[in-house]
Length: 85
Image 1 (tube, helix red, strand yellow):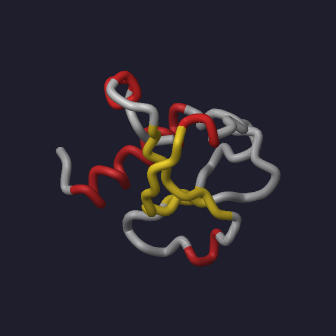
Image 2: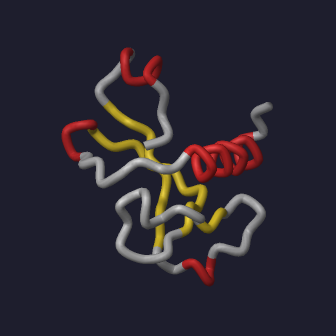
Image 3: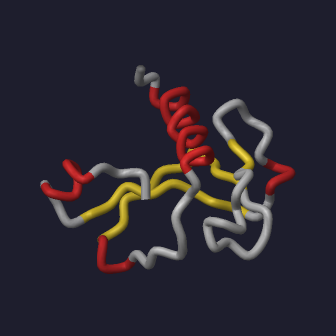
C-alpha cells in the first residue's frame, strides 16, 4: 500500500503498487530490488515495480512492513514515476 492516511480518511479504497519475485525483470530506473526483504516478512528476494492499482481496503492483507531503508528507496521511485518532488 502506497497511499497515505489522508487518502484513507477520504475513502474506502487504497492505492497499491506491485511487489514481485521476478527481480531480474526489475531493471527500469523506477524499479527497486528490496534489500531487507526477509525483514519485511517476504519469502524470497523481491522487487518493487511502479504499477498502480486501487483496491478496496477490505480486500487487502498486510504481510509485512518495509525497512526504513527500503521504504525511502520505494518513495524515491514513486517520485520519479509520478514527477513529484
